[in-house]
Length: 225
Ligand SMILES: Nc1nc2c(c(=O)[nH]1)N[C@H]1C(S)=C(S)[C@@H](COP(=O)(O)O)O[C@H]1N2
Ligand SMILES: [Mo]
Image (tube, rainbow, N blue to C red; front, side):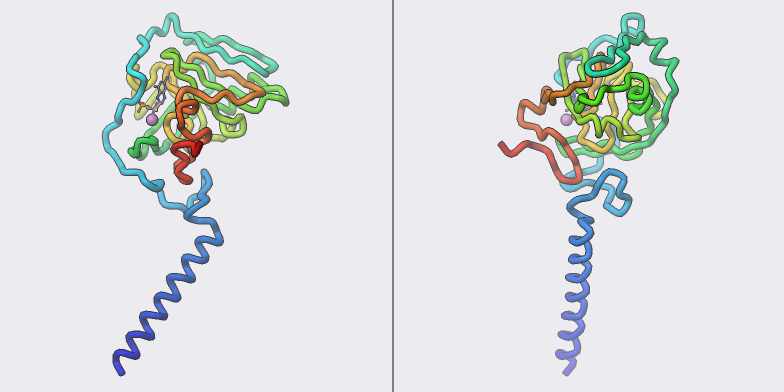
């Protein structure tokens, strides 16, 4: 008799669990978490937390030289620009805190960034209607591509400070891109040019098998073909 009761409870709690899972699946909670969806877990699938900040790049660290530093903004825009370091510092600054998710499996929580927002860049440059993509060019020869829509997200910036200090040369200083909602390879270090383009131009890792989008919540690590 006690066996019967236990069975009933077991099957009840199993029903409960199935119900919950169906709800999640319906809401797309586990599979289709979107940037800004606060319901999802904080650590994306397949990631582990690190406390230090690993350095990953092609092995060349361009020398930090603020005198010679330039940022070019061009392509399909109404207003092209070439900024020097003082021009960059003259822009309004945005501060945000974000988590880093690297495709190699590490995530680092609570990085505090200061920089110039993508929204501000867009308001100055004013991309033409045919501009659909944003290509980042770095001083080490690295490139990476994102859609204009993603560049326009409110937490995207050109960062020059991290956790209260100027961004080190090892981590892309003086200025790197920050695309917090995507795997970190989209965050180009040592930025020298932003091109607004009608055509997509897959970058260094994208042409070497990385996914073109790179959403950590969907585990878009590598492209299938
Ligand atoms: N210019 C440049 N940017 C780059 C890279 C690079 O090799 N060159 N590597 C990317 C990759 S794969 C990662 S994981 C991050 C690493 O940034 P970090 O060294 O600050 O951790 O930078 C991205 N941006
Ligand atoms: Mo990476």
